[in-house]
Structure formats: structure tokens, C-alpha cells
Amino acid sequence: QVQLVQSGAEVRMPGSSVKVSCKASGGIFGSYSVSWVRQAPGQGLEWMGEIMPLAGKINYAQKFQGRVTITAVESASTVYMELSSLRSEDTAVYYCARIYVSVLWYWGQGTLVTVSS
Amino acid sequence: DIQMTQSPSTLSASVGDRVTITCRASQSLSPWLAWYQQKPGKAPKLLIYKTSDLESAVPSRFSGSASGTDFTLTIAGLQPDDFATYYCQQYKTYPWTFGQGTKVEVK
Image 1 (cartoon, chains in turn orange, yellow):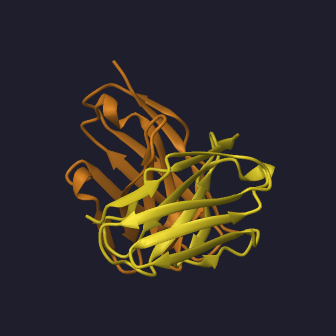
Image 2 (image 1 turned 60 degrees about the vertical axis):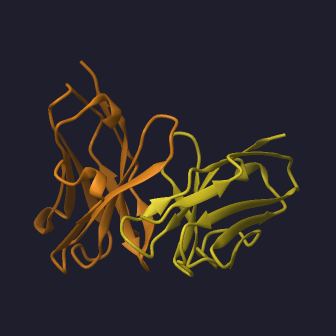
């Protein structure tokens, strides 16, 4: 039974950074990719990037290049997404999702990040 | 980037109706298209992948098809549990992109 459990809600000031975690259970960590997708309030889904631990590859959406960092710690079975230089438009629910047969098969519960002064 | 144009944005329907949602891609991507269902306050849930393959737990009233760069999600006989928002997503090319979503609401 694959499960992804994300860290709790965060509130940040504009200009600061936030780091969200995604702990995986079930399956062999490192042998599958994990993506991050965000959803602003009342809006659609937006893919941010993906890490492929086994291959040592990371892909970021151009929109977030330079501001987002996705990392994986195999010993903790955890993937992290750090977003810097936060602005109000980054207020959103951030989801991690495990890739299976190339699609976003298993999803975390989501983490609300609020950026406000 | 591949643009995904989904229509309609809102669809009003009744239980038992046949519902069709369309997603048009800005370039060829078959068969690398998925459909997700999302309910308020919940994470999206995979329904269909590779255009027409159903996730194993998804009821058979859901189906997917394609014609060129047009992709369709059909719900044959809408059930109360199906009122939700649906998204298409292409995974042929990075960055993966989603349609804007279709909210299926009670008529």
C-alpha cells in the first residue's frame, strides 16, 4: 500500500522560503519518481518539477527554475520541495505525487502554504 | 510548452446523464494523456491514463478516447459520487501541463 504523507501547513512572509516534505511508505523508495504539483485557491493544477532518485535526475518547470529545489533523502524515504523568494501568488496547496507508469498515480494529502505579511 | 484547452469549464448535469468532457492539445501527444478527478479539499485522483486505460479501482462508466489532438472523457450514467472537478494532463513532454478543469455540478 503506497502512501505519501506530507508535512503540515505553513505560513511565511513574502521574500522568505518554505520547505515541504513528503514521506513515502510502500514500494522501494528511490526506484520511482516523485513530482510536485501546486494549486492556488480556486484555481487549477500546476506541475512544478520531478525528481528521479535512482537516475539522479531532476526536472523543473521553467516558471519555477531558480526558485524551486527538489531533493530526496533515501534513508528517510522523504522527498522535499523548497520554494524561495516567496510572494503572495505562491499561496497554494502543494501536492507531492508518486509516478507510476509515467503518470501521477499516488498523491499526498496536500500542504497549504500561505504567504502573507 | 504543450497547451491543454479543456471544455466546458462548468457542466450542469443530472444523475443518470451521459457526460462528455473534452481536452484539446496544442500538438500531438497521443497516447500520453491522463484524466483526474478532484473533490473539494482533496487531492486529485487518477481515473484514466494512456488516453483510455482505467485505473483498476475506477468504475467502468468512465471511459477515455482520442481523435487526433482531441481527447474525451465520458461518464456513462452519472452517479452522485461523480459530481467533482475533472482535469486532463499531458505527460508526453516536460513541463507536464494540465487543462483548466471542468466542474460537473448538479443541474
